[in-house]
Image (cartoon, rainbow, N blue to C red):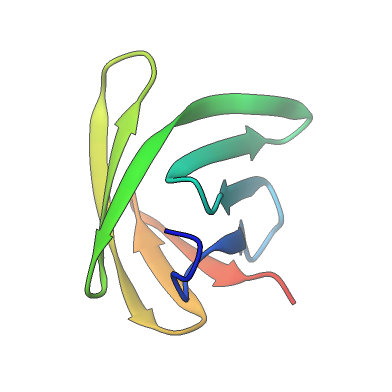
Length: 80
């Protein structure tokens, strides 16, 4: 996973949701002031991402380009 081009921090335009895709296939999502609001694992196939949260729910999303992720009704941008 460490060579995945999508590893890194992804943030909504307002900065409220910050999702870090870690090189080990895990993610850590913060919401507002709440750090690690959601954590779990992820897998990327092409431009498609699947999430398995540690609490049991699943989600998915798509990278529309190298710097944009659509997931859960939100648009995330690669943090530069």
